[in-house]
Image (cartoon, rainbow, N blue to C red; front, side, top):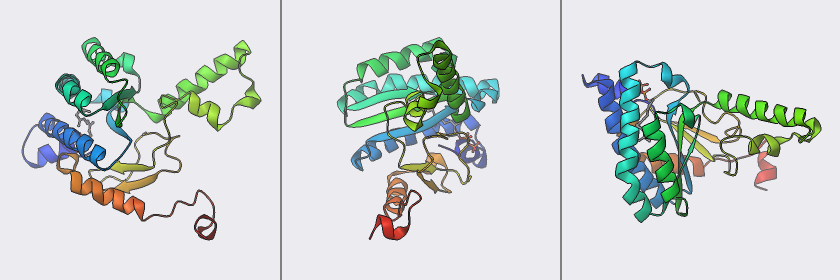
Amino acid sequence: MDGNGRWAQAKGLLRIMGHREGVKTVRNIVEAAKACDVKILTLYAFSTENWNRPKDEVSGLMGLLKKFLQSELTRMVENDIQLRCIGNIHALPKDVRDVLAATIDQTKDNTSLILNLALSYGGRNELIQAIQTMAQKCLAGTLAVGAIDEQTVGAHLFTAGLPDPDLVIRTGGERRLSNFLLWQSSYSEIYFCDVPWPEFNKAELKKAIADFSGRQRRYGKTGEQVSP
Ligand code: FPP
């Protein structure tokens, strides 16, 4: 969800105004994703590196997140949306953690769309934690080194139980992954779009999905092998 800060600054506004506008886009895109029959939508809302931003911006973002969770609960329940999160959740302020836990609990039986928030998330950090847990299990004798395969690693990530993303969209004009789902996006289709997140909308989402639909996913095979 990149481009909030620059969108605001270009309009002579404070960066936090861009994030506030970005929350409106979150609401619209959740609704649009559901309408497009997307089953899992992961939003990169706050990275491990974002803690290094100015204090005011960090606390502003935490406030927006809490307000979003409080105001969206009814809509999530009505629209059959299940909230989940990935990341170092313990690093979030307690009031945010509490609302997050309550929202996750109250939406846990919903099945139409999983809305997965990446919060205090970093792909490298996720891999380090997974490696540490697996190493501890090896030392304890509950996991054999030779038994560690792709499934084992996947099962130790925050995303355990969720499929890898088919499509990763980055808004705001930059062309990099910035520590997002590094393991999981090995074979994802990447879509870079110049539109800043506050201006991203259903039409742009549909454009990204249409672009994705036209791609041939070969997973290392030849074109002839995957569509003879
Ligand atoms: C990146 O844009 C965006 C963020 C670091 C925060 C995204 C957060 C929200 C949209 C609001 C809170 C989230 C939810 C789910 C309610 P940037 O500020 O780095 O953009 P820039 O590159 O233009 O500075």
